[in-house]
Image 1 (cartoon, each protein chain N blue to C red):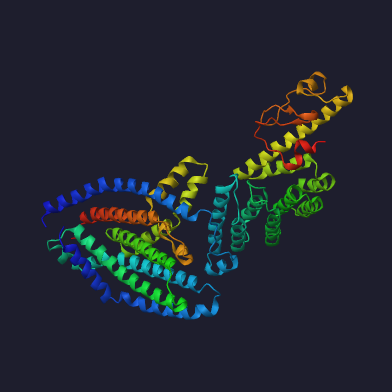
Image 2 (image 1 turned 135 degrees about the vertical axis):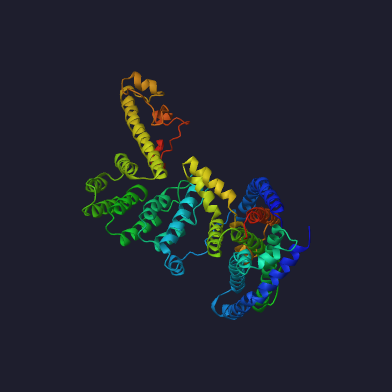
Length: 259
Length: 305
């Protein structure tokens, strides 16, 4: 494999930084500082829980917004600005370009999430003055958020290969919301007396990316351990789903007439 | 890139997608089953609702409270359905789910009507909390005073579960004042007041539930109750025949055949599920041990004498 996807990835990351995407960190930092100061005044004995819930939820929401809104423009923007033509005139294959774009946005999200996690750690230190062993679950929760963001980025990139940013946003957001409610879809299959509907619900459950299983914020807030098997299975799930989406995106993008 | 190379690379990409995508989906489905098992272990024994305040949720819902109510109602049905009739099932989150649902959408009649049945049925078929069911229905009446069916539900709860026949009669009577109410509401009010604890009255009430409900789950439960009451009525009649036998022969019968030979009973002596009644000790008739019918505790053989 050539190093070209890496070059595209680095450039995508640089572009995101140039576009002041990481400015959201300032807002996050201010929010965490404010929360850390205020939470001691308004909550009784649950300062740590509030900070963890707030911090992880913010990391997830900021990440999702970034993944969707930047992800849907990854290919479209290059076509609009006509920079794609000069890139593809170089010895780079279309799938390499897509993998590079995906890697670049993922790198941006990793940097962004890492810095936010650092902010969360500082806020936690401020309210508790110590770290304990159960706090490690917070890192697992952050890791799961990153897996979720990787999946959303791949989804957004897939849609951006064949439709407009507006529609890509709607599709990605729709699939994300449906994936969050995946257990409800499985519930339909278990309780409906209609076997056809049950089969359809089961099919949809297994085909939709299941975002519900990436959410362990409640466990992190209460210091409950997350089984290692879940970490391993979720990792494999996210990696395989991302590969599936990138293959599909490559198939669509390779047939696209760019003239 | 030449057209030929472009076509070749597109063909390769599509071929790879056609082969890899179904295979990956199959692997992902297997993996999802494993993840389901992992998450089941994590959530086992935990019945936690993040937000228990319907009022707070209403504020947070930004005007989408009816939609949120529908989601909570679906959640309540799935919660109940996943536990109903499972030995040792508990229903700690049922009331909060119904409370939140009806706070978010006070007009959601189905939540009051079915929710009251889910709450009032004895475990493991329900939460065994008729008091909360009464609260729920009363809240429904306060929000929807024109819904006479809620008075029927209130009368049902008082007579069947709380055995408060005075209040049951009042509820039926109050509901019967609604111009849209069925005529039998008045009949029910009089009948419950006169013979509240009679098996025939209970049967009438359950028959009405069976005839009017649109939900299969509730209909099945109503039919079970009707069968149970019919069996109790059958046992009651057989017990009267057994006592006649004692008066005639100075001893209790030991088999059903003896009752039949004495000309005291005739026809098919079987419960509604088709299992023949059997004669127990001291001439007290009983259900066949293999019969799926479960009698209410206050209708068992020990209550016959």
